[in-house]
Length: 160
Image (cartoon, rainbow, N blue to C red):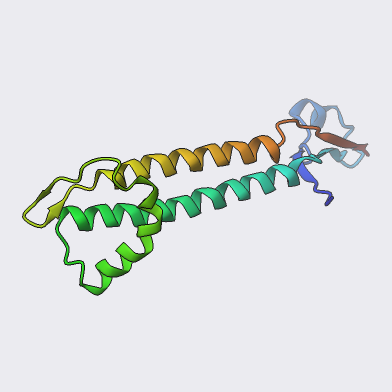
C-alpha cells in the first residue's frame, strides 16, 4: 500500500500586531513573531477507492461505446441508409450481435426505406441498465466508504 500525505493547512508567519510593536522597547530590535502549524492527513483506503473509481469509469466507457454504436445503427435505419454502403454495412455488422438478443421482440414498422427499429431502443435501455448495475456492483465490492484519516500535526512557535 502506498502512503500518501497531503498538507491540509499551513499557517504563514504572523506579522506583529500594532500593540505588540508598541510594547517592544525602543532600544531592542523588533521581535520576530513566527507561528507555523502544519497538519498532514493520510487515508489508507484512498488507493482502493481510486481503483473502484477507475473500474467504474471503464465500465461506463465500454457501455457508452456500445450504446453509441447502437444509436448510430438506429439513426441509420430510421433515415433509410443504404445497407450496401461501407459505413452502414460496418455499423450493421458490428451491432448485429449486440441487438441479436432483442430481435423479433417487437414488430419493425417500415415506410419508404426507413425502418423504426424498436429492438435497438430496447437494447439501448437494457445496456444502460446493465452498465449502471455493474458500476454499482463494482463500487460495492471494491469501493470503500470508510475513511480512516490519520493526521500528524506539528507546531512551531518561536518568539525572539
